Structure formats: C-alpha cells, structure tokens
Image 1 (spheres, rainbow, N blue to C red):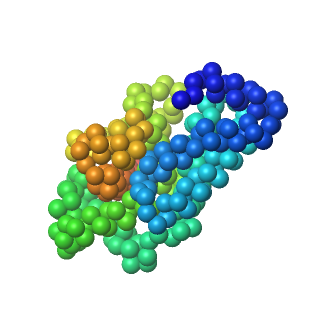
Image 2: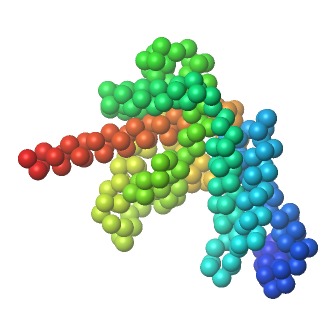
Image 3: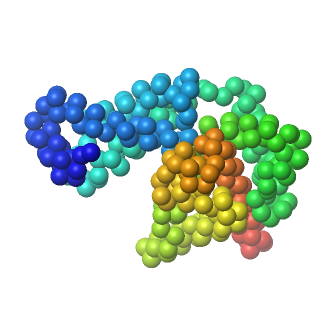
Length: 259
C-alpha cells in the first residue's frame, strides 16, 4: 500500500516530467477508486458493470491528466468527482430502465409525495404498497429501479438553492457566513431527515457522512447490498417529498402575507 509520501513523490515526478511511465503508474495506483465509486452508487456486478468500469477509468485518466495540486485539492477527491461524473453519464447512456419501469418510478414518487402530505411524515413501505395496490416484492423492485435513476439527493435536478446532502450531514452545525435562506433550507432538510426512522437515518449517515459503499453499509447493518439501495432510494424520495411540501407551504404563507 502506498503512503502519502509515496503519492507526493509520484505526483512531483510526474508533473515535472510528464513521463508516460509515471502517468501509467498513477492511473494504476488509483484504479480502486473506480470500484469505490461504483460501490457508492450501488452498481452491482452484472451485465453493464464492466461498461461502467470502463467509463470510470476514463474519468480516472482524465483526472490524472488534468490534476493540479497547486489548487489545494487532494487527488482522490478530485478524481472521485470526475469518475462519478463519467459513471453517471454511462448510466444515462445505457438507459437501463424501460419505459414502463420509468413510469412506475414516477408513480412511486407521486404516491410517496401524496402520502407524505396526508400523514405528515414519511410513509412506510407497507403503506406505499397498499396505496399503490402492489405486493411488497413488486414495490421493492420499483424501489430498486428508482435507485438507478435517483442516486443521491444532491444529484437531483440541479437546483443550486437546495442544500447539499453531503455537506449537511457532514457538518450539521450552523455556518455564520451562510445566507439566511441557505440556513433555512439546511434546517428544513435536517428536520426532514430527523423525521425518518432510525435505520434510514443510519443509512444516510453511513453513506453521506462516513462515505461507505452500499455493500459496506449492508455489512454494518446486516442487510443485503440491494436492500440498502432500495432503502436509500426510498429515503431520497421521502426527503424530496418533504422538501417540496415545505416549499409549497412557504409559498402559501408568503402569498397570504401579500394579501
């Protein structure tokens, strides 16, 4: 296993010389990052797995070629970002969900949002299954599909005003330089997370704060990797529904004040 001094020496030599042999050494040294990213995204070995490994490797190579340590970024952090982007692009291009599966995922999102509003809390799986008229196995299959397209809350539709779930879970304290709006959003997200059952909170903490893979979380909680992916997808849907409900209430309150 390489040490920090080994890594520093490798980067110093490579950046000074751009020696192809050192470039290859750097790529090979960080190949495990690709498997790590796939594990974080809950991609299990299967038909498309090696295609996504290839995409991840392209991200790693890009990171090695573009890395600039003078910017103060740790290479593994920088590379993970580029690898993840490539893998997500690969997932989208593979179009792993059929049209009926995508329709079921949208129906699941709508059902969870309606039940969230009705109960004032995240619905349980049995409640969602009953509402949708599904057997539990069919619901869990739909959750697995959802996990393929809803990989994390912070990767949702690009709303820059939404708080980053990674950042929120890693540092739940107040930041005095944050704007009031951002602070309110962060507080709302933490409130939504606190409304989840304890096991769901544990999964989010292990995933976002401790940065474990889905498989590692399963080992900690004695769950299968696929089951962790399902629960994670349900958590994300529940949090989205809670945040959308809070946003709707906020808009309604502002409208009342303007009358």
